[in-house]
Length: 211
Image 1 (spheres, rainbow, N blue to C red):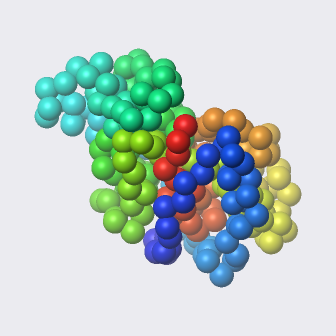
Image 2: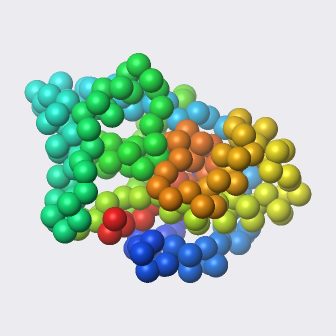
């Protein structure tokens, strides 16, 4: 079980380079623990089933679900005029069990669930891993630069090369080093494997964003 970490909701905006400044404050090893248990995959199928269950209970179409996910940030949407989530992004999860880490946050927010509750073998939700609370003027986003910096710090402390860490995390070295310059997202399963390896809650790397 991951440790409880006291945290404040920190607002990062890539446009003002706050994310870059936060990278310089990567928590030290005293705030992390080593995971003794195997890394558990993020179960996209279970996430889809949870969406489907709530959709059926509420009598919604997939288009209506996509609308509700988007309307959680209606103030921000009005300012930015971004493109909403497509219903096909939700429906395709049934046939192609993968999802970006950023899209997953929209769904988790609508469900009121934690990322850890969708690890394979999870038996319930735990409030210790709750995502930051945010209002209609923000969206939940992964702080990918902070995730990369924290991962790289632990990699160096453990004396691992990128190829060696990639073996542990079940990915390619380029998928890991690419996080340093990733503009928007990576796969949710990889992000969750990384935080498990660091012994940290996913919520430590999620913030209420204005983008």
